[in-house]
Image 1 (spheres, helix red, strand yellow):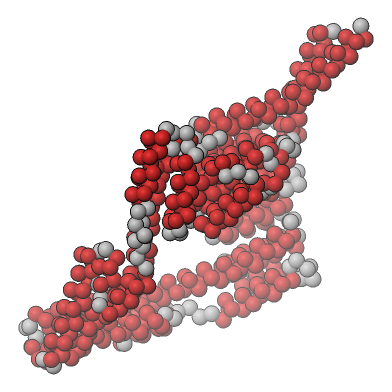
Image 2: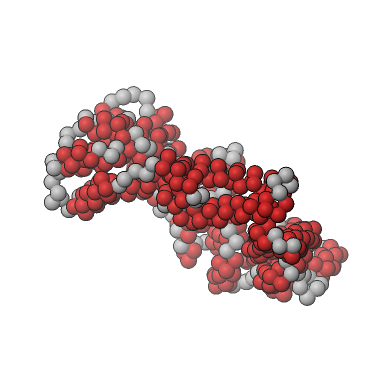
Length: 298
Length: 284
């Protein structure tokens, strides 16, 4: 009889300890359902509640990771990075650690902070022994390398991704061909330097825009500058000094200096567009390797 | 025996969830301290809907919930919502004094000095409340009342010393300031284009408008001398000159008004800053 009572008490203690874990899993279920219904702010609140209630580091890290996804989808990338930076990567399990580094890299990529992405890759080399283990991070690394125009390294990484994928040999051969096509030239993207554009437009107004690829704009500025200068000199020749100076030369100076001041920004914007177009090509290759497709996994 | 066991298990689960609910105030405080203000607002609104009966315990809980709600609204600069939440904190609460003063501060930040003073006058005239009243009077530009209230403040308090001397300096600046008249500026601009803007304190704008006006005038004179009055180029130049001339007079009239507004805004910002620091120091 005594044995039976002890057994029952033992069961009671077990049930008590389980009830806590049941509550926790229910919390995660609730938060995930909120996340799936796109109520990201509420989901973030529930994830904070989980990380506040537990003392388990891995659960806490998982909750913070989920919260970072919510914040990223709300467009608050800096807040997401703040929430991720609270986690100490050293004591975590490998599965959660890689998730957190993945999310961090994605946020850095959105914020165009490429140096931090390289730092994270070197960190993951320290944490994981094989490259196979942190293969999931490579797509973001490749995109960052492309944007910094380090094409050789990017090509090597992409080649590695194709090599280690599970798709069949004929498909792999096709992908190699595509990769070669993209990276065939010495400079896959011809980025224009803003300094040369400015230098060109100081000597011949409008030539900087033509160098940048805006032919129509370049011709227009050249026409305006030359015609106003001609008008000014013509008027001065016939002794209309004030009209010549104020109308002709004033318009010339304004169009000349305005074109010069805006050329650098325009070149940078166009460069960014080119990089994005090139990155989309790389993403299309990565999507064909199904396992390394850059998707959000929970 | 089995039934008793089952009852105990259910009770334990219920107690656990109940204790979690009771601890929720500390969770709200955690959210507020960490700076998760938007989440804090959601959490408080959720918890408010859970309160069904009004006992002493729930009322005190509601007070602190309202306080945290107001504080998070205040931190994300939604001042109207913050005021309405601060006003709901009842007199028995620990947070009452703080919430009264911050509600008043929010009112004065929104430019409603009368409402701010009305809230403050209901309270006991302590040092810090008197200080805030004096600040409000300075914002209203009522310098006599400001000096009168300042006499009742104990200036030896460490948290007020510096700010009181700052406010006194600002009051002297306001006293010595002479308002510029927009009509005078317009008259000056009609004599010499751009002079009114220089009088308003915008020297660069004045010089540039003088150069453009004189440019059109010179072109007009030149065309008139060489091509005559009926030539279209003369008409274009002279009409451009008149447009710029009249526009400049109009502009200098408004530039004085804008300059006065800017001056008042910078002084108001300075005063609000000086009121804010002792409030934060006193209550934190």
